[in-house]
Length: 269
Image (cartoon, rainbow, N blue to C red; front, side, top):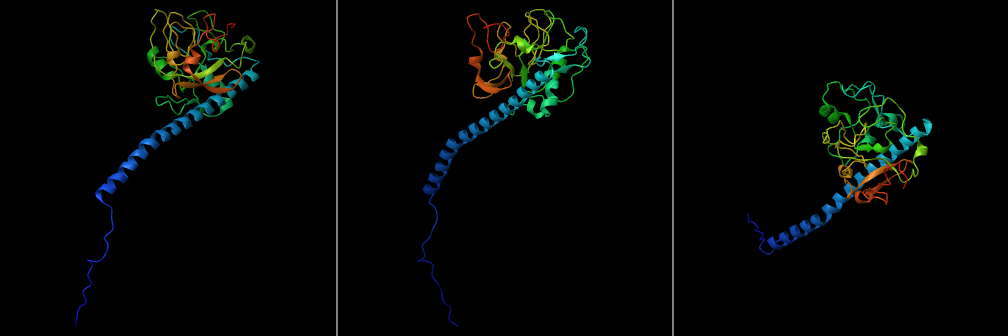
């Protein structure tokens, strides 16, 4: 039987040359270099929008609180003990606790861009170990801080208060232009003026001689540097009338002719 041999010598071989492969790889690399920053920016924008949504919910919750409590702004801290020398805080409630019944979510207290956030839990802090550094480092949850100018009817510098009520809404001249809540970066700074003063994002007692790490605009030097520009050089803030918006940090640092920051203070502009 005679075998038939089929030659493949005449067939056309197909495939990519090395140069063609290198060109394709180079094109992919160029596209990746162009698109990856776009995708990263899109993700950052999505996180900014989510953070702003959180702020909106918190601002509306604070406004509902104000309506339910005789036009009183939600206090930053209430129900403190008779003395802060022993660091005993029975039944403490922060502004987060006051408005939780209105927002009904613990997630809204956390900015998705805040990698170091200590999540808020619906349990008021209660530390009696006498260690203010430890207490401060674990007691202020979430990514947002209250404007200390409107914390409540506090006593003199360094003195605690048992008054559970916040400032009167009527005391604020421009509710749509005055910040109530804003983002902050959490870390502890011990007192530098010899007086008691501490806080992460918030201050329950005013002490003008302390360098507390806080979102508190009237301290000297200004504490705006403690507010992070997580979102394109700015941050989200909720205003006393309930609305929320993104704003640049340098805009917040502006002062008027009287040397005050009108977006934070109760003083007349």
